[in-house]
Image 1: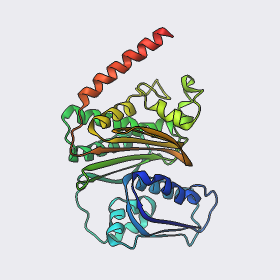
Image 2: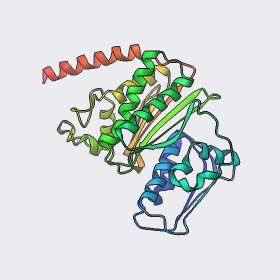
Image 3: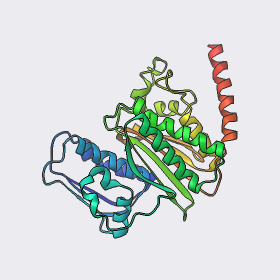
Image 4: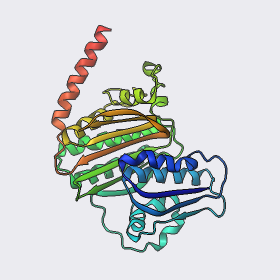
Length: 307
């Protein structure tokens, strides 16, 4: 089996990435695999987390027969970037002793890392929040709230996704474009299957509807454990900032923030991807967000009373 990734895979090229990885995603028996990244030009955090998750799952399941190979990019800069973002540490840890560069302090980015426990969720959420605050103006209250939101997003993977490998997260900022992207990925059961565990959402029809529902306040598959405000608060924060929140699960894709949209995608994604893209030249203000959260709670209380 040969997998070829070429060109650039920014956030808006996830369809092409999932299509290119589809044979590997559906692999269910040991096979000699050649993953060729020689013509890779660029990859964003969301695409990197998806690639890492897919490669790591195949390795964990013993699906790579002897003779399987990962061909690194021909571009030295791209190859070193993937190493700095810890692709090899996650999927081929035995090859990381000969890195051809000196690692620098992670400022405005965080390498891709796996997490599979509540303790690891907290560490990942802290690191991602710190990466954000290194490039985006935030006050102390906003930083604390963002960390809580990211912690809830990471915990969703552990509590709801039923993914044996847990999740993968990465962050990258670009000073030239004044943007920062954070991605959290799992290859679990997806948002729709997770939400329908809660009897209140048992009749949800379709992945797009499930994702849109998950973006509403106080929506959770486990109301006894989770407040259900992480996605909603993050969505409003990014809207005020001029950024965007993108969710991909199953055949559904919903994005919200400075622009809003939803669509059925041609290729299913086996799990859930949450990507946050914030502008680094505008602040993140939590005060206005909580005002709207209170309004949303009042609306929900009134709707429940009317019912």
